[in-house]
Amino acid sequence: MLPKIRAGAVKKCGTVSRSERSDWEWPPSPTVVARMLGVFMKSTITKRSVVIGGHKTSVSLEDPFWSAVREIAGAQEMSVSSLLRQIDLARHNSNLSSAIRVFVLENLRTHTQQSAMAHNGTTNRHDSAPWRPDLGPA
Image 1 (cartoon, rainbow, N blue to C red):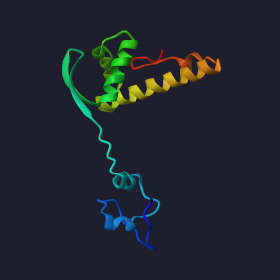
Image 2 (cartoon, rainbow, N blue to C red):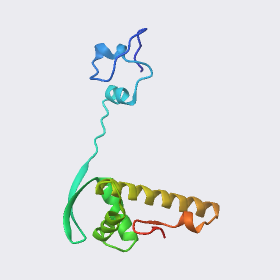
Image 3 (cartoon, rainbow, N blue to C red):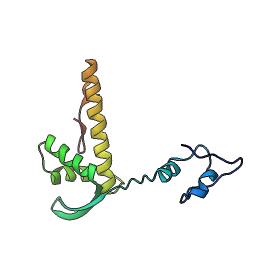
Image 4 (tube, rainbow, N blue to C red):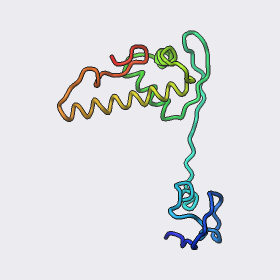
């Protein structure tokens, strides 16, 4: 059940007590709704040591991104270290963790486009080619 809102009552995000629930703005923001429902999603970031181009470094990524990197490396028949090296060489002004996230997103977009084209029976070599960090579209 949604809280009743007093006329003119507006309150920003904070902890929600039962006595304050009638003071929230309408419609409530996603943060307010999450607090009211007691739902807090926490991102699990894992820091891993990796060797890239013969140099040991650490990379912090959320677990789903680490899983995606392993899947992509396996699909391209290369080691995770080799894939990370290609991503590292192709990045311009971003940190490595951000470059990896963008790479995973681009890979997902490419896969989604390929699936859509296969479903529709269309092909376009440039649009459907998998993105490679060292060369762009294959």
